[in-house]
Each structure stands twice: as C-alpha cells, then as structure tokens.
Image (cartoon, rainbow, N blue to C red; front, side, top):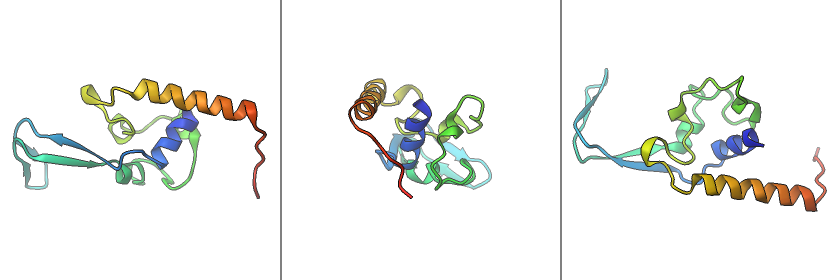
Length: 115
C-alpha cells in the first residue's frame, strides 16, 4: 500500500513547488550561478517528480519503483512532503488519513478494472 501511495504522490503531488531561503551564499558548481544569502529558492517538485533523469518512465504509474528492493533514486528527488529538518509537520497524519481512506473504500465498494 505504501508503494501505491508514494507513486500516486509522485505523479499527483499536492504542492507544485517548495520555497526555501538561502542562509548563506552558495555557488552552483559548474554553472557560474551564485545563490545569495536571503535569496528565495523555488524547488519545482512537479518537474523533479516527472524528470526521466530521476525516475525512468516518469509518466507511467509504477508503484513497484518504491518497493525496498527497487529504490534507487536520490532521497531529495521524491519530495511530496518536502525533505530534511523542515519537511511537512503533518506528513505522518496525511499518510495515515490516506491509508484509512483507501481501506474504507476497498472495504465498502467493489472495484473493477476498465479496458
């Protein structure tokens, strides 16, 4: 179930981008670009999640890419709740609510595949 949720959040992320404020000057190696202290940096989550450099066949729904034996991506390329010490405080609650909703749907309804 976790892999299905992770893949769904990769394809249909709730937030399109995150913002961070640089706490010091930082030069992006090999680009000649410097991010100055206090600059706002936008991290394009939607674009990262659909970049074939990070996820093969990014437009295809493949939950198995998130199974423990298949995880090969950089942890900072999967960002539905952000990353690091300032990730979403409600992440665990949101994941629990998603699981409860799925369990209730499967318990109450019969689903059939379409052709």
